[in-house]
Amino acid sequence: EPEVTQTPSHQVTQMGQEVILRCVPISNHLYFYWYRQILGQKVEFLVSFYNNEISEKSEIFDDQFSVERPDGSNFTLKIRSTKLEDSAMYFCASSEWGRTEAFFGQGTRLTVV
Amino acid sequence: AQSVTQLDSHVSVSEGTPVLLRCNYSSSYSPSLFWYVQHPNKGLQLLLKYTSAATLVKGINGFEAEFKKSETSFHLTKPSAHMSDAAEYFCVVSGGYNKLIFGAGTRLAVHP
Image 1 (cartoon, chains in turn blue, red):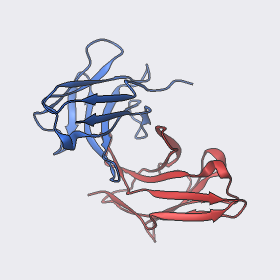
Image 2: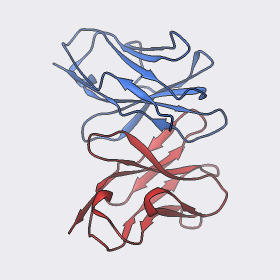
Image 3: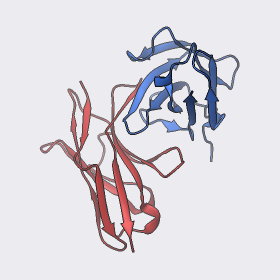
């Protein structure tokens, strides 16, 4: 069964450093997303991406964040100058055109120290 | 704006007894609603979805949910809990094609 894969599963980084979280969406999906879940809090929408551009983003997704589809299979989330409060589980998801349900990866646990 | 409220943060049941996880939604239009499950150290798995077809939706692992427009509810049920059902369950509403809006989650504990 096709699935969304994320790497790495865990990442520890020092405050102020840049991190790149990587995702391989399901191959025939056209919409891609990043969500995050801070420990003990709700899963929050960050950004959606379609046709090589951001289609919607939340207030959380400020200039510190960027997304890219560098090739035909990968979808990345870059966080510049990480802060302690960026520590969270980051989920990548994808969906087919015209479908509202999304399929999620296993997540990347980011710890900023 | 779309939102969901999960009425219980924790639910504890005995193995073999019914499960009820409650969710109310708010939507300015006919919503798409979902239940996702998150097992410890795992990703988010789609359990079932409602997209304006049948109001009683069957999902994986014996779960089902009923859409009740008059009550703005979408409660998740299972007739008989299994130990492997212990997990966190999220009620989710679609905020359009571009995003999903999650409830706070209900942690289900199943004891022998």
